[in-house]
Length: 454
Ligand code: TRP
Image (cartoon, rainbow, N blue to C red; front, side, top):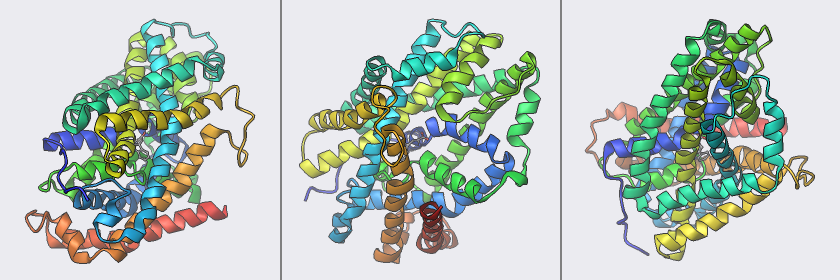
């Protein structure tokens, strides 16, 4: 077996930006605003925070600490920690990473197309048929594929440069830029006349909209946005120095991610309300792709300085997708390096090809292959559903069981306390341990069972 040494992230700021860059992605920009608006505003945010503290953050800490302790990728982790029989966890996680790369890279490709269209000032008319343009684009066979190949190629390009000069450097530039761009859009949105109604819709709690589905959505969002169950936190953990405080950086990442998600909500929902108010129409809050690629271009077309806002928005969307996809790509690349002992360059080529296979099917499933349905879903939706509901959930659950029930408590506390050197009080470490051992696995099991049954 290879020695434990590997290239590490250079600075604390770099680690935080890489973790935040992985967390902040399409999940924040197109899922969180919509989920919050539809599930009772601040009521949803409150439930989300409770689940974050009880389940999602403990699960993130688990992946992180196992990664740092084993200093390898998810498939070899159990081996290195002395439990080779648990290897199957890595298989679940890598399958979920490959499924996510399938649809995520396709959407990444769409963001490239919309960024170039916005730069060419193509979103200027508020009467254009944006819905028609979008469906015509995504269903065409070649262009979206080319954009997907370019998007994944950009990730591969960063990945060639390695952990410190590639991932860390890119994250240190991209994550703060993304943040500034989104804050600027949010300021534009709330200064539009009529934006207040949207802000109220987004932020005032409405508990009448809360149901068990709300809880399931909140937990699913927490897992997706923190990027759990695909080996990405684990691999970043394996690149983290041993004096980094795992509990603190997990909480900081989750807090930055939530803050960014709320700012994204403020950038999007009030703008939609303001423009409908100006046109005398009812605001439409579509989910996912429709929201960002159809509703927003028409909103931008109607607002003063809309061209600039459109460029800023699609620039942010592309950057957010890039740093997130980069972490998933790294989980697969590191897995290839650790298992085959090939050089990083070769592993990156192989990973690029592995990612393009599901991505090609996902892209074509929007057009020429839309008739291919499995479990009633097209390939894009199938990979989304399988990764979110099955593979990420099960990989996370098994990792929690591995940490809480198979590894020794002393080892977990030893890793969380940086071998006794960290200043975190013992009661916090014990609480984290109880969450990892009992609360988080029970929470994940409950939601998984609910999903299976209903
Ligand atoms: N968190 C990212 C987002 O919100 C996506 C992401 C990155 C992810 N790494 C992951 C999702 C690992 C699942 C698993 O868009």
